[in-house]
Length: 163
Image (cartoon, rainbow, N blue to C red; front, side, top):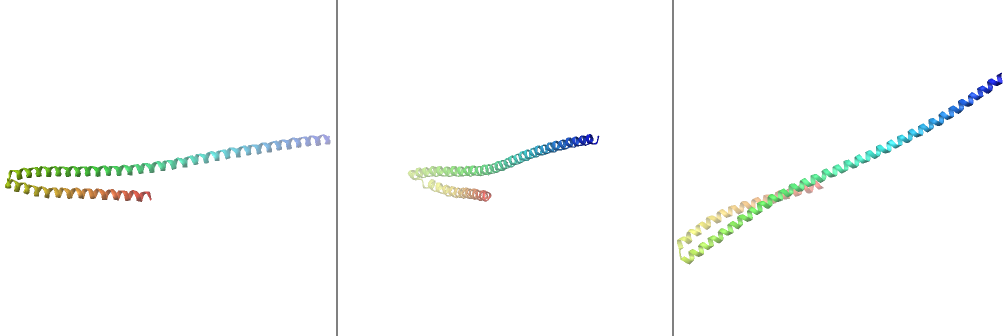
């Protein structure tokens, strides 16, 4: 009777040991699987973080390119304005030259006719035109100098922005 109980207890102990070993093995397998899932999640998080950083870097580069393009556009607009002023100055100079040619033709005609009074009137008109043209040329030169100075300042500012 005692021997049967002993066998029964040993059999139950063996079953309990087997059950405990299986439970321990299953627990280790579950822990290993959990660790693998955690490692996979960490790798995915790192990958997403790297992609996010790369996108931020690309966005910063795009912003810098936009700023540079805006600066180039501003500089180009300044150049266009300057060129328009230069064109106006050239047109003014051509107009002045055409008037000089016309005045010279009138003088030649007066000389050919021997009309000294007409020649004196033409000379007075020419002097007054020259005074007016001188003022116009001074204004144009001042405008061009200001435009060049402004362009130089903008180039220096752009250069400082690059450094």
